[in-house]
Image 1: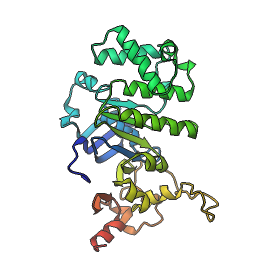
Image 2: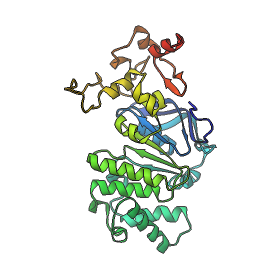
Image 3: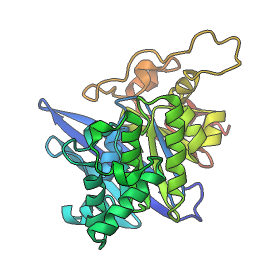
Length: 336
């Protein structure tokens, strides 16, 4: 998947499998995921709820609760260092400083009994030698950077005194306060007004540029957001990556039926013939009942008999454009 081999890889995920024990059964939430993120890149991970996106991110952060979850196989290398072999203390040194994460729901990620200032300063003092006064100044500064005015005063306030958009800005400030090399943003604008969504995404991208060669893993279900913010994107379904490519080629000509379904479900202003948005039939299967063959076969309108019994491989159909589909594989084998 090395579309630009001259750039240095920041994160390499290979063959990642994260499984959960649920009612004496095994839920394969992430089942053989591989992707790379280069320095100074915004990489998108797209899919419906239940596709395995958030579990992938939590696996990178080594935050999978055990039990019931466990990373059973694979490799996660950050700047060449294997994260899966590090101790808990070594991972704590990396989290928040080198890799930070913006969680999906800020009200549950923020501690309601501690002030915003305390929570921001805790990360600063843990990862630096700043004294309390300098840490407070840095905390107020980063609040101002993410669009929260009068930062010094608001450090004394608590999460319930902030609106949803402001709480998400606090989460962004906490994630970016130590200038991480990799920012993982898990649905960072969920349930926010579309205008606020655009503002927050722009602010995240702007702040990322303050750190040299910093990268972002943007997790979302919205391909429209990806088209505006990312350089490359991976489409995930059923715990596996189904398609990965540069954003331009993927938006212009998606190869996987699932990716095409996501594209067709987006509104297209000016298209007179589109009276209703198209939908993908069916629902995302339970991770306890994933189809044996192609993970998308039960919902795919293009499936053939082979799809139900044999899972396709993720192959490079064109330079830098990979797809997991028997139909695409046949086209590639035919030289098209």
